Amino acid sequence: MRSIFALFFSAVIFISCKDSKPLQPIENTSDGTISITVEESFKSFMDQELKVFSLSYPKAHIKVQYKSEIDCFKDFAEDSTRMIFVTRGLDKAEQANYKNQLGYAPTFGILAFNAIAVVINKKAKDSIFTMQDLQDRLTGKNSQKIVMDGSHLTGIVRFLKDSLVKSNKLGNNVMAANGSKEVITYIKNNPNAIGFVGMNWIGDDYNPSQVQDRLQLKMAKIECTLCVEKGIFASPSQATISKGQYSLSLPIYYILKENAPGLGSGLLNFMSLERGQLIFSREFLVPAKMGFQKRNGMMN
Image 1 (cartoon, rainbow, N blue to C red):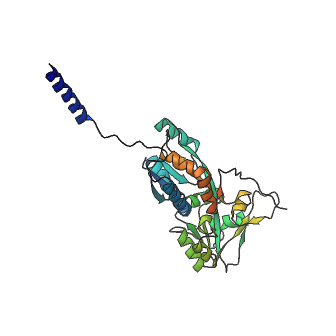
Image 2 (cartoon, rainbow, N blue to C red):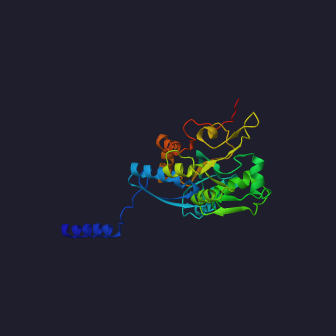
Image 3 (cartoon, rainbow, N blue to C red):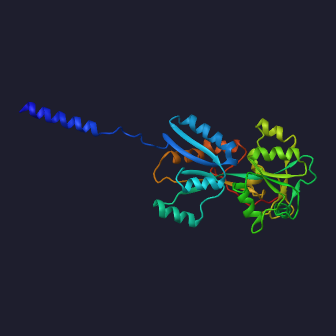
C-alpha cells in the first residue's frame, strides 16, 4: 500500500513540475524594461536624464526612440510605447478616448520649461522682433528666409503654428531643416536668414560645441507680451522664462499609460524629484517641479 501511495505521489509531483512555467520577472519602479518615445528636439537633455537614471538603477532598461511629436503620439496610440515626452498634454477628447479604451486615463504633466530660440547670424541687421514681425515672416508677408527645427510634424513647428501662424499658412519662404544642428549650420552660412530651435541646442554655457556656435550666432530678443510695461524685449534664458518675460517658452510634458507603479512611474518620479530636476536646471532649462511658478514679468 505504501509503495502504491509513493508511486502516486511521485506521479503528481512529476506532472506538476512538467506543467509549471518559469516565473516571469515582475516589473517595478526600478527594475524592468520599458520603451519610450521622445520629441526629437529634446534629445540633448533627455540623454542626460536617461544616463543618470540608468546609472542609478542598473536593472532598469529604457529603450528610447527620438521622433517627431506626431510620431510620438502615433506610438502612444498604437501601444508601441506607454510613455512619451512632448510639448503638449492630452486634450479632453483624447483623455476620454483613452479612458474608454483602457478603463483609465493616462497621466500627464509639465516637467520643465524650454524655449524656442530665434537664432540669427551675428552679422544680421535685425536682432529685435515683435510678435507681429515673427508672424509676418512665418506667413510670408515678409519674405526673409526662415528655417525650422525639423518638419511640420515637430513640436516646435506645431507650437509656432498654434501661437503665431494660427489660421494662416506657412509662407513659401519657410523651409524645414533635418534637425536642430542643421538649422544652426544654415544660419551660420546664411546671415540674412533666421532660425527657430529649442534653447537647449544653443543656450548651454557649459557645452563647448554650443559656446563655439555662439561665436557666429546669437539669440534674438523678442517682444514680451505678458509684461505690464510695454516695449520690453528679451532673449531666452532661465531668468526670462521663469519671470514670464520670454514669450516663446515651451513646456516639456510627460504622458504615461500606467495604472500600477511600473518602470514608467519610476522614471517619472526620478525626473520630478531633486536629481532629475537639477539635470533640467544644469541643461539651462527651467524645472517645473521644484517650487517653480511661471508668472507674469514686469520691469521698471
